[in-house]
Image (cartoon, protein in one colour):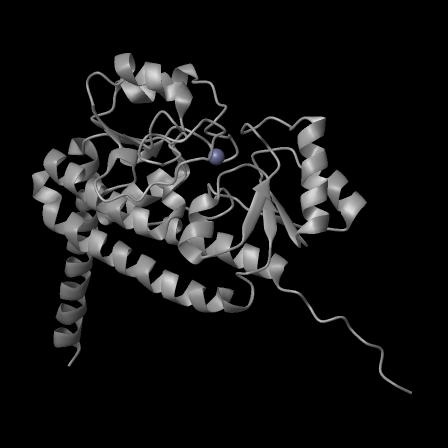
Length: 319
Ligand SMILES: [Zn+2]
């Protein structure tokens, strides 16, 4: 009886060793041959990772604590661009400081502007300029496109196409992953629509004008923003207008962002009693995984809902 048992366990051991070698090889082999994919900001990294999945994690240029509107390129980041085969960014309307470096440093790579992905439904900022002949107000484009689940779906299709062009051998994996990512987004929209059913009409303000896509796609009631330019504190006149809007429109919440100083928001809270919440469009506090992008949107919506949800005032029990 002991012999078959011994030979059985020996076979199991041999299989285990073989599997371990296979796993080691499988983990290392593609890393040697894999093309270098570089992304600009954490949400773009997350969207590309959702499609790349088991084939690898793309590199990212910017730390999530840094605002993409106001950063300056470091030598280590220039090096990343230089050695890249494929670079994904949103476009010059967001990562403005990348525009010129990409022309020279990204010359050897295929550079993909996701804001140009087919099927995006873009928002434009309002301007004081007169309307065009066609009656539209074509202000500058709102570049925070990843915050729209519908736009993110179009971006995933573009990412899948570009990755498959670069490494056709992985096309099937990319197609499978892209499908999963798009389904997750559609499911999230359904769930969050339900969550927001009690809070979506309640007025709120944000720190910089970066959440218009969330407001549009989820039908929420954003009534203004503090910063007239991203990263810059507004002037006295604008602050007066904000104070009036808070009072006259019954604004319940003001959302700050980890990329900017909250000083003005805190002052307004002291003056008006407005509730403060925090929104992180870059998902800096969330762990990187192929589902990160979906979790960024989920966290934003839940933070908004939590701040806007008016808790009934506790009444002391009657004696
Ligand atoms: Zn922004």
